[in-house]
Image (tube, rainbow, N blue to C red):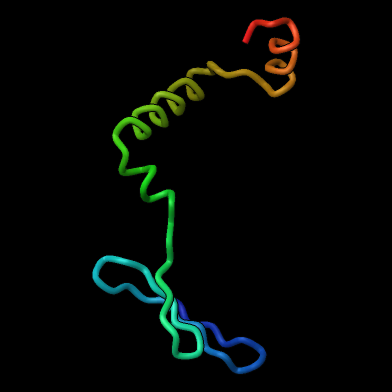
Length: 77
């Protein structure tokens, strides 16, 4: 996503893409945007876990926080 913002002090912040990476420029200095989610999404094992969790949620297979706390208190976890 490319954008340009002007701060109250007149500093311009711009975002752009270069070499398939995202950057922002603030006051002439370039900073690469680090997004750890990209690394998680590209890990096949983690991606499989996320997809399995999403499937469970759609099928109603989940516990509320209160249920998990009670299960932990009973030693079921």
